[in-house]
Amino acid sequence: MPETLFWIYLVNSILLIVHEIDSAYWKEWDLFKLPGGINGFLILHFPLIFFILYGLILVFQNTFAGLIFSLILSFAGIFAFTIHMFFIKTGRSEFKTPISLFILISTLLISIAQMVITINSLGT
Image 1 (cartoon, rainbow, N blue to C red):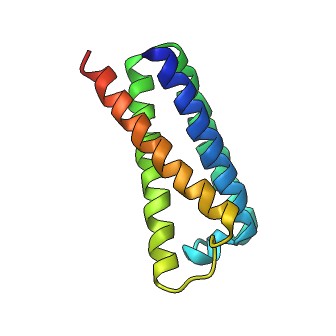
Image 2 (cartoon, rainbow, N blue to C red; image 1 turned 180 degrees about the vertical axis):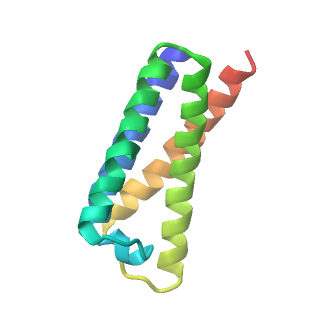
């Protein structure tokens, strides 16, 4: 199971990072009313991507902390899908392209699978 979790964490990481690239295109800092524009948005992503990749290392090492990082990443993926669907349902035009929707839906599905695998790993 640790090897499966590693690969699913990697796939989810890629999806979320690509989503963040897409977010820069859609000027997500305006959507969430974040200060600093593109500069603040990019600065915010240094620690975010560091923690995503650090979590991947911990999952690879099969540590308890890796399982915690995996749960956090799972929740982040489910949250990303949910909040963006909320914005779309309330009439926002961002993230409605086929590739943006593909990334969000894939993130949801992978995040759910990752959460199930992580919870099962925590129980053993």
